[in-house]
Length: 243
Image (cartoon, rainbow, N blue to C red):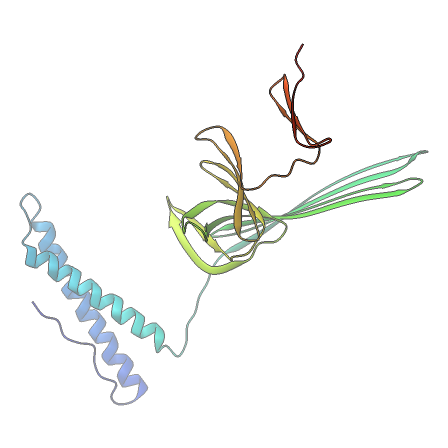
C-alpha cells in the first residue's frame, strides 16, 4: 500500500496552505481507515502488511509535522506557570544581642517540571558579628560518570545548578541533564552520591550500607570500632585502646 507525498510548494501562500490542509485531511482519513481495519481484526492476528501500513503512515505524519514546524512562519506556544514564594522570619532581641533567621523558598512549577530554590540567612549581632548564609537549588537531574559512562538519575542539590538542555523521561518523571564539571550532591534510589568538579568522589550505598570514598585524608587519628585506633602522631601507628 502506498501513500501520496506532500504537495509541492506552488502558487500563492494561501494556495499552498489550502493544498497542505487538504493533504492533511486525506492523510488523517487514510490513517483512520487503516486503524479501523486493524481494530476489526481483533480476535485474529492482523496481517503484517496492515501493521506495516500503519507504521509507514505514522512515519509520514511525523515527517510532515517536522516539515511544518521547520517552515512555519508563525509558531504559538502556551504553558501554564505558577510561582510560590514562602518566607519565614525569626527574630530574638535581648541585652546580649540580636539573633535573626530568614528563610525564603521559591517554587516554580510548570507542566514539565518543578524547580525549588532555597535561601537561608542567619545572623547574630552582639559584641562580635556572626553570620552564615546558604543558597541552594533542588531539581531532578541526570549525570554521566566520565570514568564509567554510567548514567545516574536522582535529585540534584547544590548552591547553583547548570543544565545542558537535554532531558530524559523515566517512570513519568522528567530528568534534566546536568552540565559536566559541577560540584553537587545527588540523591538516588541507591543512596547519596557526592560529585566534585564533575567526578563522583564519594557515595553512601544502600546496597551494602557502606560509605565509599575515592580518596581520604586522616589528619590526626582514625578509630576502628571501640578498641583500635590508627594515628599519625610520631609516624603511622596502630594502637589497641581497649581495657
